[in-house]
Image 1 (cartoon, rainbow, N blue to C red):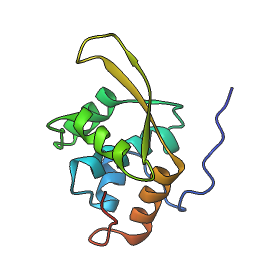
Image 2: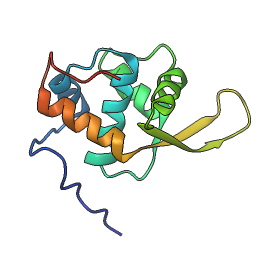
Image 3: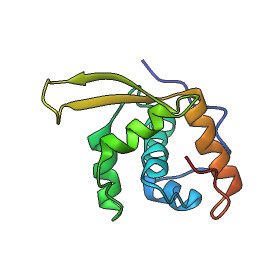
Image 4: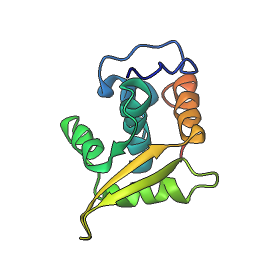
Length: 123
């Protein structure tokens, strides 16, 4: 089954998450998590995103989050929510959590892309 391409995204092509992150110049940890989540969900068409995978991608770019769960919690607490938690695997505090950007979260990253570096709409 092939996922449909997000036709609402700005007409910009990014080969790597680092290019997307640089295009919006995300400054806060929540912004960085949201943008890389967008990369996995809207560009790579993954139906759900894992917090650890997002933090690993950010670490490769030298932007690892101090607490990835806290960054996602702040995105969830936004009204309207930018991210929703789908599930958690394991019962430990460090259990793997799966998330999905909401339509509002996707729209926020798209506005950040349209505004460009220095004019982003912060979380």
